[in-house]
Amino acid sequence: MPEVTISIGGRDFQVACQEGEEHFLRSAAGMLDSEAQVLLGQIGRVPENRMLLMSGLMLADKAAGIEDQLRDAMNRLGELQAKIDELQSNPAHVEVPIVPPEVTETLAEIAARAESLADRVEDDA
Image 1 (tube, one colour):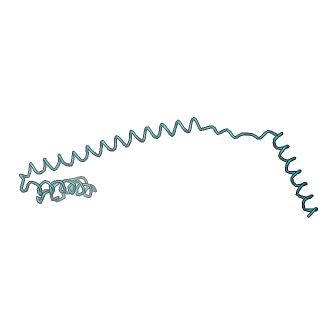
Image 2: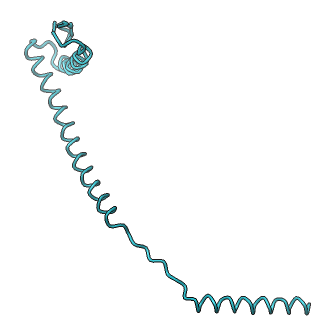
Image 3: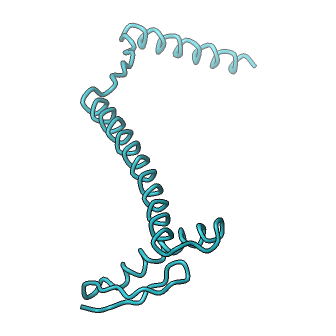
C-alpha cells in the first residue's frame, strides 16, 4: 500500500492509499489545502486539529451547496423530460385549408379570360 506525503496548511502528513489512487488523494489534499490556506489567511496560526476540522467543514459546506445545485438541476431535468415526453405523445396538429375544386376552376377560367384580353390588346396595338 503506497504512502503519499501531502501538505495541508503548510504541514506535511503521511497518508496511505490504495495502489493507483495516489492522484485522487493528492487532488483531495489539494482541495483541503486550499481551504486551509484561506483559513490561515483569515485567522493566522491555528492548531493542527482545528485547522483540519475547519477546512473540512468549509469543504463540506461547498459540497453541500453543489449537491443542492445538482438536486435542483436534476429536478428541472425531470420536469423538462416530462414536458418533452408529453409533447412527443401529443404532437401539435396543424390544419391546412383545402381549396375547393370550384375555386380552382373559377381561378383558371379568370386566368384564361385575362390571357385572352391580353392577346386582344396586344393584337390591337
